[in-house]
Image 1 (cartoon, rainbow, N blue to C red):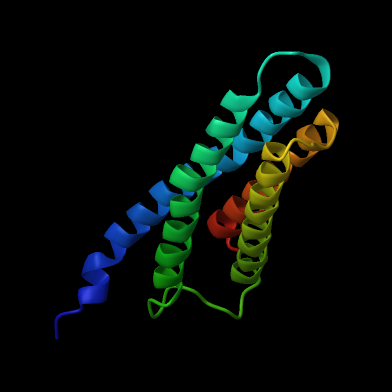
Image 2 (tube, rainbow, N blue to C red; image 1 turned 45 degrees about the horizontal axis):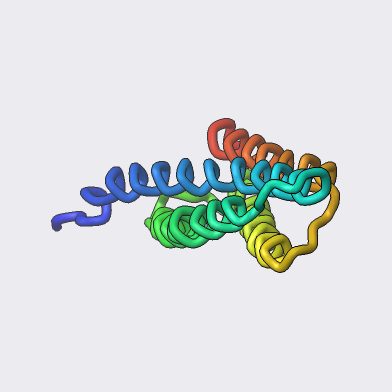
Length: 148
């Protein structure tokens, strides 16, 4: 019998890795834009319209599609029989961290709307939040590679 899942699995996995890279690039960069945006607003008369445009396009055109592609391809991989052993702890850690990463994405979307509306948190808050995706990435990659 022809196993089409085994045939397309490497392609789905490659697509998943590319989607994750795109999503993570946005999650690393958007909070940094927030820092510049918040600090520009607080200490300068320079216009912030370019920040609003960059933040909006990054979120809508890159991050949202990449997150959706990551979830769809990731769930496709998880549903492939024999790939994930749910009696181990690593898939649970990865799942929790991916959900947390998605929640961080939603936080970024909310903060983008707040900044576009003319209010902002302190630049320090955005600097601290910029570390969240890094910590989650370390947990995700470690759990997948080490498989503890």
